[in-house]
Image (cartoon, rainbow, N blue to C red; front, top):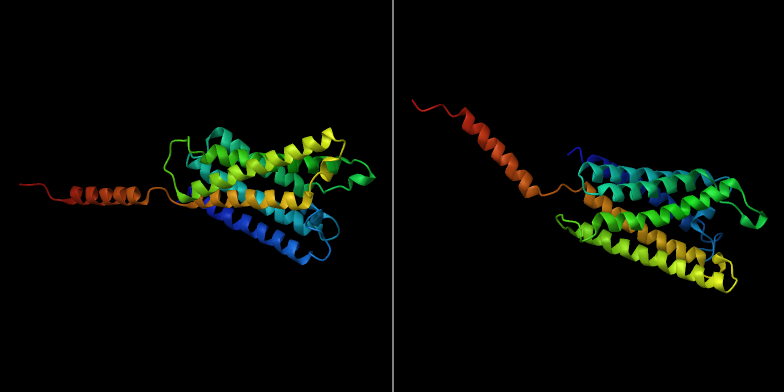
Length: 231
């Protein structure tokens, strides 16, 4: 069905972007400390365009998933806006390079940081709003999985905010109060898992038995119309 096609394409495109990022992570284990260094470190240097393209693919795939959800009227206005906020945040992090803040601030680095915060905050909100059990709709395993990962993402964000608050009260820089690279990767894995589950739900046809019944009813109705009248 056409309403599911954008989600199917979105899953493929997002999956390609995720695969590239995982490849960068594995290939740079000897050079990049995953406990302290953030994922965006892959965007620095001459090969940074590869990371930017991968993040762009993830953002574009997320848009495809959102389009299917909107067409099927499953996301709602708030959920759709939040999901698009995640995509916009990813595009911002892809286009504007991470900055070395030890040498002072920069416009590009500030936009990159805002995009990162925007993405990490918007996706948990979107998933919880779209798949929450309070919404009246048919439940599925994909929605339950997405909602579970969405709640876990919210807990990640709350934990990070708590650590930042504790660090601020003790006069410590926010990026020093936790193993930033490890925490960011944990949050990213959880959010991507929630997104993929959301995409599977968006790409899956609804009530297949109902669709089959409608097709059967239409066929029977057509056959009845072809029956010659009684004389």
